[in-house]
Length: 74
Image (cartoon, rainbow, N blue to C red; front, side, top):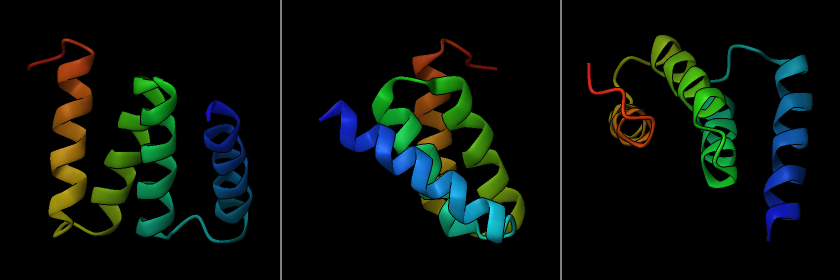
C-alpha cells in the first residue's frame, strides 16, 4: 500500500511542475504525504492549498489533524 502513496506523491509533484497554483493538487499531495506519515510535508501542502483557496474547509480540518499528529497545538 505504501508504494501506491509514494506513486501518488510522485504524480502530484509532476502535476505541480505544470500548475503550481492548483489547490486540489496541493491538497491531494498533502493527503498522500499524510498517509505516508510525512506530516511536515503534509502540513506544508495543506497550508498551500488553503493559501490558494481560503474557503477549503477540508484543508483546514486536515491541517489541524496533521498539526495534532506533530504535537504542534499552537
